[in-house]
Length: 193
Image (cartoon, rainbow, N blue to C red; front, side, top):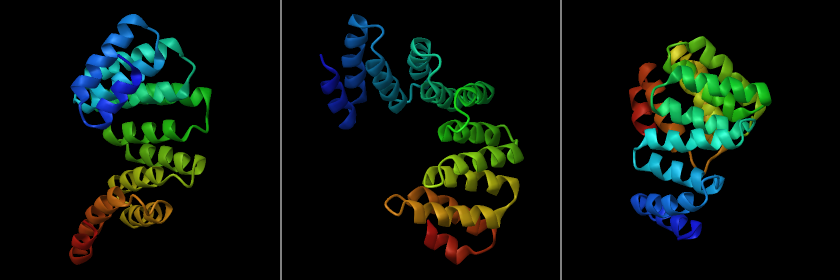
């Protein structure tokens, strides 16, 4: 039972098998961060966000000053609609690294989910400032701007995201279509979807 076999199973979409293989690794090595992280991802892919969060909690326990682990756990909390918990993890990560783009993205998504749209835009602005070449940060800012009522700004961010990462524009297109529809540009919206 190896990590490589679990990774192969997960890559092939056999997430139940990946979890079983990783369970065996974690039973022998409870502090194996790689196994815990991969099992959390496999659990998430199975739709078991509660079990993923348990592994993410363990990962943070192993390295509580790791901003990446705090963000991963915060994302797990966000999937479970614990928006305050997600925001708390993002803020804890930002105390450790104020330029951590993923933490700003997480904070923006948590604030948007809580209906705090101006705060979501502000956090997304900081994510884009921290990593201006990260297309996802631009998409997150577009989402925040759309909910804050800045449709023109949101549309501009989807265009910028597509230019930043032309290999994976699908998510930006989906949001662009939604924004164009809101602007009454139905023909362009259909073309963007």
